Image (tube, one colour):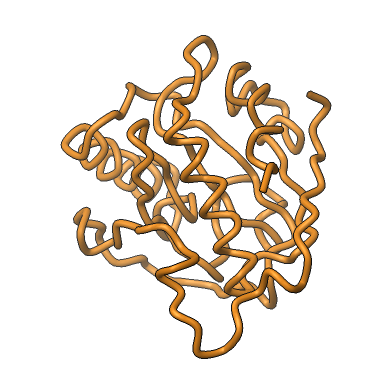
Length: 187
């Protein structure tokens, strides 16, 4: 894997106005459902994100809602209190069971990759993927989420998929997840 994966999603995959997005988009656990505190402030992207940046939380595995909810609240507290972010840094987080959790959500500038947040969406897999492999369910849900982002116009149809390490000196998203990024572009 050499980073910079270009997704080739045609304009035809956009959802026509009035279409039921539930047919195209995966279920996402909303902020209120996982107990997020309100952001201190919020900045909106100026258009569709041109890049999707994949991260890992480098924390404990999250394979069921109770573990994931604990990790989400821990991350938000860490980001807001210790790092002085305005909110949790990621736009979305993915559990090992494939459950998708709303971080900042679509169209909001994240705080996930310094200097690269104003044209990207940050998606974090919950767990540490230096040695553990991401689950097929997590990869599948992420692929659906990316497709949904394109369909809804939040992610540019020819977005670039990156691992955090492509933009900064870091091991993130871990070796095994980084190697699996190519699986996220198959439509």
